[in-house]
Image (cartoon, rainbow, N blue to C red; front, side, top):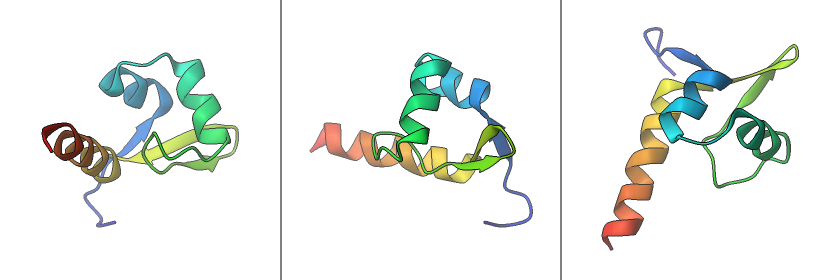
Length: 65
């Protein structure tokens, strides 16, 4: 993580990945690998934008292969 890396909310990540927030929250709670790495701040889940970007890029490579 660098100082310029943006921290995304559950709503932002759900919109980017086009999944319901409830599904994203459930997968994050279970530590599922089908979503980007997340961490909890109080009651809220947070993601680093760079982790979400890397996750999307890795999925694109899997589809292309």
